[in-house]
Image 1 (cartoon, rainbow, N blue to C red):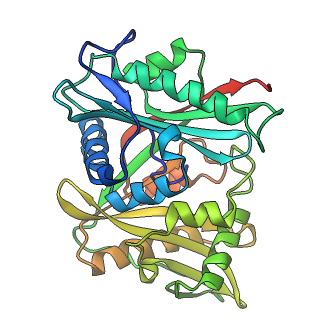
Image 2: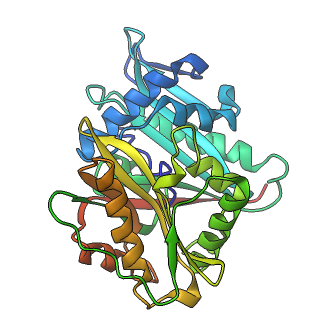
Length: 333
């Protein structure tokens, strides 16, 4: 699943109408910082190792939304922000909803209200050109066995996949990567041409993913490339002039300290079962450690057809959160 992408909604509240004094409205552009803080607080309450979201990330997402219609903040009686939700079209027929309730406001009905709003908004989006006339799917990512899980099931959402958030410490000596014969390694230069080559490698590697259809370059770059991105952290493996493996890496903050995030780790089919995936992961660890980072995390499909989850566990990464991917079919209209 895409990072921040990605890492899904945390709408936790009881059913029914919102408590008196609470309301919803569209977010204002200048509230990106407040929304980022709210979302991080909500995520951290369920997984203390969750990476901090930045205002820049929300501004980037909002730039592709109709902010007045595709996002909502919930306000508390004192006017402060108590919840947030958005609906985004990943591609025609595929929509993604995110929702969060700030700790201290659970049980006020915010979670249920935001889930219901996101369903209504997704149906309207699915009925508009170029999406109209075809069935669509709305997906949420939520922590399993919590209130959001129960609310989605009660609304006929179906659990289709389980993802794991994993993390490990970088303290102490790290094993050196062992590269397959003929492979050379370097960082990404960040040029548009290079980014397209990285995207092509990742999309080919993930062609057998659960959803089957990947992301366009435009969507991929919007999800992974932002003002804080440092391509020098990325690890590119080449053989005979072709990129055959990539580790797309980013820096974040966990529990107030710098942390690393492996946003994507992809190995071309022709280079699988050569140890390249493990080498890329260990090289990413080393890049982060060189920056003074003490922990690294990533998200992985627990049913990965390539066994990525086993690779990460073998590299001493431990599961810190289990996230369900829930989907709701939106009939053609």
